[in-house]
Image 1 (cartoon, one colour):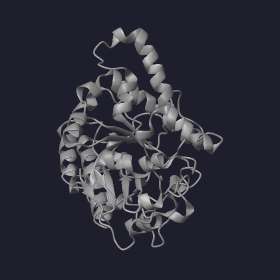
Image 2 (cartoon, rainbow, N blue to C red):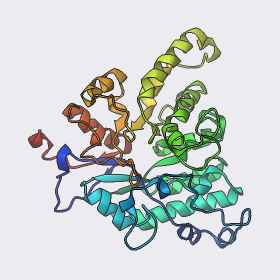
Image 3 (cartoon, helix red, strand yellow):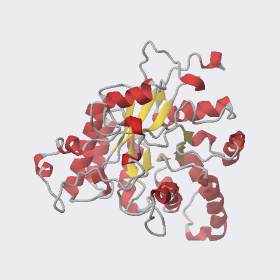
Image 4 (cartoon, rainbow, N blue to C red):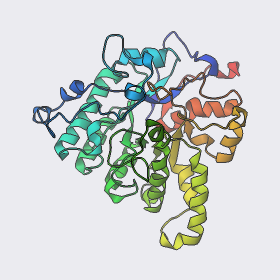
Amino acid sequence: MGVSASRDARGMSSGRQGMPVVDTDVHAQALPDAIASRLPLRWREYVWGGRNAITLADLVRVRSFACRTDTWPPGGGIPASNAAFVAEQVLDRYDVDYGVLDMIAVGASGTGPKGYVEAVCAASNQWLAEEFLAADDRWLASANVPYEHGGDAVVRELERCAADKRFVQVILSMRTEKPLGDPKYWGMYEACEALGLPVAIHPATHGGNMVTGAGWPSYYFEDHVGYPQANPVHVASMIFEGVFDRFPGLKFVIVEGGWAWAPWLCARLDATWRVMGDEVPDLERTPSEYVHDHVWFTTQPIEEPEDPAHLPEVFAFSGFVDRVMFSSDYPHWDFDSPNDALPASLPRETRRKIFYETACDLYGLTVDTSGVEEFE
């Protein structure tokens, strides 16, 4: 996509890590009125079930919006709603070169009439562009599309967003109606491949299904630690339904879903494929090859061994050093700053990949690396 950063007098200084930083998961949250005001009149006055369908829906959390207490904007609003304040707390404080904004529109999961869902996705993208992208050229964004409804509306919104190079991927809730290999999503994949847009999934409090395979959890604790459960299902589905053979240029990003489960999944998929491969004879490669070639991960919340000094061994064993990107998960309580997210025991080469090289390759970004060699 070829987006380039414009640097100011701050130069390249980026704190203790001593290198550029691309943050691949910064949340943006719009107040309901901000989205409603951007809807066509037909849907602005729409009432669903006795209330406006655009709500600040949130599961029981230890804190409102599961956010840090210092992320409430001083001028009012909710965490991650004020572009200038978010830039101050993320981009400026840690000298982040780019921040990828993730906001999963409430309507994107399919609740409500098709036209309403389409309008909410378009309004959400418009809000991101007007409030964040226009305010600072370090912001990039994930586009919302009506993925559960599918059809031409998805393609139109993808094409509209892709015309603005600051939209670098499409984002879905991991709580989809079907596993993501299902043919209902193929039209979206075809468009994303043609436009060069990765497909990202992210935990959300709304969507078509529960996060676990055994019912709804009772506590936020269970919900939070259960986020990765849906991801192996989606990856296996995309492999065995032939998505990556049909769309060989498709890139799939798992945001805030962990990554240490991927080596286990690859081993299990390959072992099963060796004895049951005749059920999916059209696969062109082993399942693990598809994962290594088509799937990316973000760090927060990163799984760490009891002794951080062992993390380099975990990365080396996993084979996914080239597929993991830094993310802070701002403004949530488990936010990771780039200064503290990775232990010093990681080799500089691995840190470079995680902090910026892999993200730059995936999203087509350019950062200023002058001074990195001198620091090293």
